Length: 575
Image (cartoon, rainbow, N blue to C red; front, side):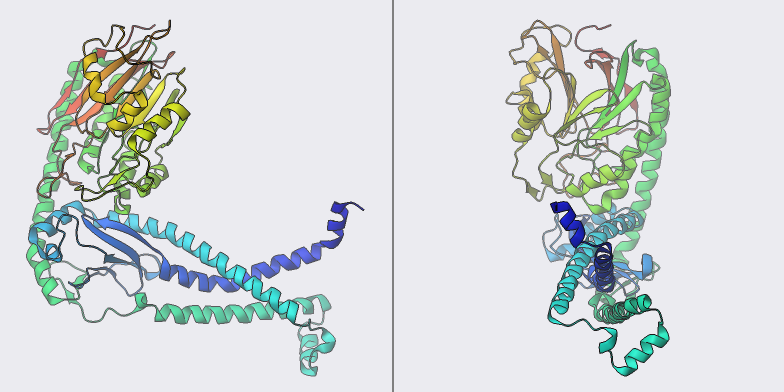
């Protein structure tokens, strides 16, 4: 007899069905306990403005911010099933560094500017809670189910099965009256056992939920007269809020008005500039266009103004002329869960055109998840065929908070190492493509040079092949962010073989008009008008070779004037 036949003889369908229902029954009993534990234990860390926080759930009719020494703030808003967010401050604020910062008027006003839209923060936290809750529930459910199955196995091994003949007389009579059919009677006792255990686990979960500190009543609170549904646990903190609130409201409204005015003026100026550019910016026969950006860095105004002018730009360039959009890092300013709404808007900035982005040093792993969730493509240390291009990306391993208070690199991988790895292990030197980096150090390592500043000597030879002293590099284009100012583009000539190609290195400006060296008195807020020119690059590529053949720079100034440069050719004429 074969092994398969022996196994079939030992494993009967009835036994498999019984095992399945056993697992199902144990999982069902464990579910209320797993749900209650997931509610208690789900949490994540984030920052609100410059304040580090831990976010968990509560169920007391409020969402709350617990500052610790200065008490709590209560917002009478909850989400599904009455759950609110419990935000606990874990460390002193980054830009204040002491507890006195919490009551400093300037500090409060600055953070209010950074947290410009509480509703979008609430939505982002809701999505984060759903994701973390699902993971926590599945982990707890799997653990409790495994423990329950071990108990069932132990009981079955140490006990005796109870048949009809071994039941007490009253049990025998009750079983026959309730279920006169033997097969139904065989199922009845396990069903009653599961129902009893489920009732017990549900009752215990309910008791544990009521005993959970997150369900406790908030006690005496002090409403803020100027703002509905907002209260404080301390009258002193309420007094501070009452003094600052009018300034916050006035400043927020002023920012909104200035932003609206800036957008309107830019749109009008861009229409004039686009008309003046005329046919000079149209792609030539056999060309397609990539819109290259970098460092939007959480600027709602920068994103809004680009989103507003792009439809007119696409119409002027021609149907399907723009086939790809790249962003060279720093989508957000702080890498927080709360910035999910901005990431979504940035991802929708050029509808119908795929967007490839790289993680910058102001983006976190949470940001990368948000980027992917909202449709951006992030092929980290990978090459993908996108819109007819071979696109390679190397995510920045560093993370820096808004004011540079801390720089971390949990991976231990250096900027040089990610550039070298992309060059040696990912990119095909024989094929042209687009490589996207955030920091110049990584791009320099990819190119095999000490610094991108070495490319200054190539200026003036953008269309004339010569021996530039740089060993051949992968042909195509290298997009780099981080500097918040446009430098170049530069052309590296690949002349070590009979086939001459070239590589364009483009150090892009900030597409959000964001300040790259922020201080507590000067920084780019989500609703503030740009502190630096908004920079966009149109990159023209030859369809057959994939090599860049020209570029046009679009600049939206801090004074709301738009400028479109003449086209500059790079490389050799193709056709």
